[in-house]
Length: 308
DNA sequence: CTCGATCCCTGGACGC
DNA sequence: TGCGTCCAGGGATCGA
Image (cartoon, rainbow, N blue to C red; front, top):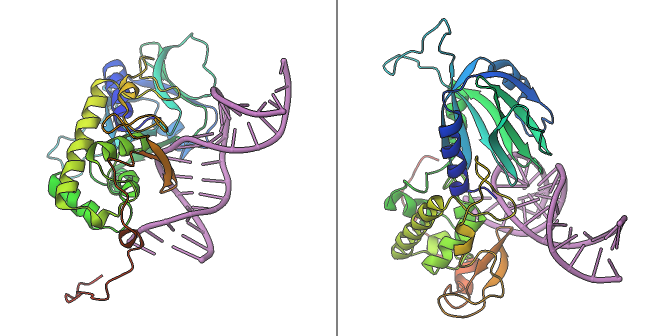
């Protein structure tokens, strides 16, 4: 299940293996996960993959007109630099990887980009929970603006504001891509375990100290997972077909009934925000009822008049 | 604003 | 061997 570290791993692999390659043609098979299949068939052929980067759980294939195109790219000082990109979300089971053109198609191959070196960049996705979209300029900017802070770059202050400014439970906040982009179920559970915070605790009930601890834990875990090329649950493999190693370091996720590595109690699994949430009942104390219900205090200190 | 429920989709695990 | 059932989960959407 690709989350930030897995997507980062795939993006880095593709940056090495396909950046600089020109797309000659596009073949689409199933397209129900593509925003506008026609746009991809129309716009991709002839463009060069300038760069592959990660944006949250998306991969962003930055595209430029081919080197021999008639119109040169405007420089950075230009008034309206144009930008085009292919957004690829791997969903649960997606993968994007180069293959030799002659290789038989793997099952569930839905998109093939023929490259100028004879290879094919192929997208496979059994469950088709992924997403693909060609976006340019304003549309691209608007789409990217929907997402929250980059977990590896977010400052302690911004993290605290985003978390502590909400009544939603911390697990829901970590998973909410409008709050933070890139965190999924595995790394949410792992970071909450590391920080000793119960997944059902409301964001606004976190102390500044807890917020700081959680951010530090999240960043440390994500960085370590990237170094280990992600977690291979199910069938995640990177662009070279290698699996990741971080799943061996999971302390909470997928360990229901096993002993907590910190206090020895059994890891429990509950549903929070509609997702399986693994935690240690000893290290991650349940929020008190008053905190969960949120209904109390009749003193509303709303004095300021803010417009909307 | 926040919640849960529902849907999308397929493969794998499990029970019989 | 072959069913049927349940579960996994990111994200969109809808009603409460």
